[in-house]
Length: 239
Ligand SMILES: [Zn+2]
Image (cartoon, rainbow, N blue to C red; front, side, top):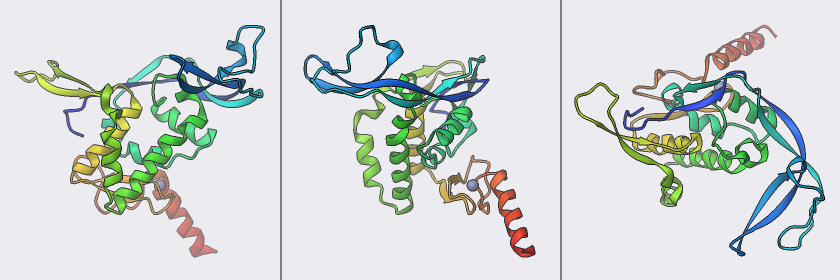
């Protein structure tokens, strides 16, 4: 997309896997006031551990699904340049370990924080992007622009880039993590001439139009879906 946004991210070149880990949901206090629920692994709690939170509530030991890197060399790549429909792919991700793992294997975690690796914490970003796509389809942009009025973008770095090979430094925006980059891509999509369509086979949204490398006449999000639809139509014809 626009050269104004510069974003590189890393993913484990050996991929990721899912583990179940036991822990407790504990409520923490910050400055004695703000309460934040945090999932703490039993392995991280000092003995003797206590299931009692700051606010006196008690929690049971439970299992949580965690995405874990396989420990290969980190691979640096440019998500926004490689995938103009990243926000639609996140929106089509299901809140289960298989689906989240597929996303992480392709694009890496959403941010540097540990909760990015907890499958259940993907809920809000999947719902947000999914609601925003429905809003784009209904040309109801208000809920999206309202969202961007919050300080989600406070982590954006504004700087000048001297490495573009041009004679003058170029203004450049750098999102702090993949999550911010995805919302920024969605915001840019709204203000661009590009359009969004849903794949006829799997329903995932994809962006087409200038600079996306996708033809206006395309009906499928990927070659895989195009082939799958072709096989399905052949089977219908034969059966
Ligand atoms: Zn598809």
